[in-house]
Image (cartoon, rainbow, N blue to C red; front, side):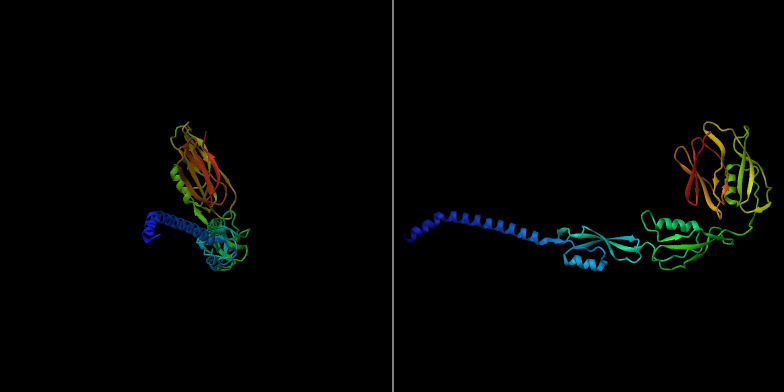
Length: 330
């Protein structure tokens, strides 16, 4: 075969050679790509380490070795000693994940309260509410008020904490019982009796709120009236009596109607060692709520006169805690 014949043969088969070469190249690229990604995928799989109970800094190092990264969440715990310790992780230890994944790490901020605070000068009710907000349901009560509470007469307002034990800044290691000595107000305090005769509801509420007197109301109906009014009082105006003594008020009320009901709300309260805050709200039939009166009371019988729409509900609150509801009806 001469050179010419060889050249003709190459020319005639050139297209086949080029096409075959291109097909082989594409096939090689596809196979190489598949093999590459399969190897990368296999190499990226890592085992999540167990970091629960570790200090956060140590946990981060363990994750970095596996090319994993933390997503931090903080949470209070019941142990005063575990601040900075990993409480939980997600996903859990032993899970196979891809490198570069973020692991949710819940770290303790320590106990919600690790030292005794200074409560002197605060009211007992404020401290009780403070503890209730700190130690919600499911959380260990690290500090509690020791019962019975001790009270003593003082010129400091009633209900104020005078002394505490243990002292402020004492470290809390386990559950602590704190003792309080609380003021019950001045001993043998005297107050002046206000003139109540002729007062109508709004003025009566104002007098109840401002006076250190417990009013008990004796009611009778007077059909000629269009509004309740005080007609008598058992102690004369400007006389001096012991604080929170009871005074009887004689009141006359109009006839109740289908829409408006008149009467006296007379809850019996337990005896308190010092005067506590009592509030009476009215929830009207349309759902609106309004405070009728707020006053201090030592417990026992108290009387709240009213003239309210039928179906109104009176809500009695003592120390910011609802204790009773009363529906106004004929």
